[in-house]
Image (cartoon, rainbow, N blue to C red; front, top):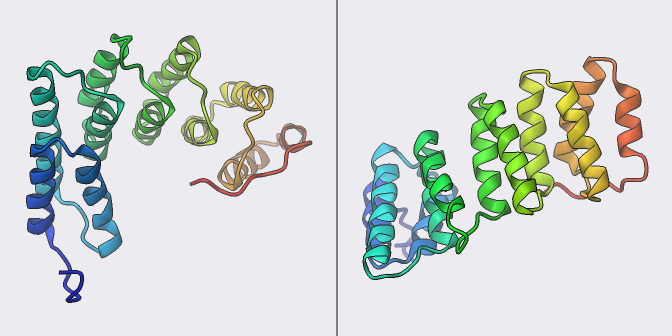
Length: 210
């Protein structure tokens, strides 16, 4: 189809995504789902449901065969539920994953949840996730802090934001241009430019990772 200049539609992608999920090729299913936006074919409810159903089936099949779902399988499921706004189900899977020491959540999975929860104004849950990361020894990255700072900006949670800024400095986690855009707009508006200058002093702002 690509060779002939043809673009797949939602029906095409639904069939392919379901097929790859059926053979436990989670990576390819997620790649196709993410590729839809690059070919101007936005995922609709049918495609999203097909992805979630396929991932769930793949997970059940793995368990039935005595296999333990790996971090990719868990991450794909959490990502899919976050994409369709089903955060309760995403958190259930995360809780199940966290209870298993064999497959601990990584930074990527925490970032998925933190970003989605912040976008849905569930900042208190995000704060507990950040504490959970620290307790499990999972190191946050710039994307983690950016999502958290954006969520705190929405509720004007300055004190917690200052704590995160200090944490970034202590962990030598360089801010990127997204970080600076959030903090510049926010801290300038509330008269905290000195805090901003102190934060950026000594940092070489890295290229945006967004």
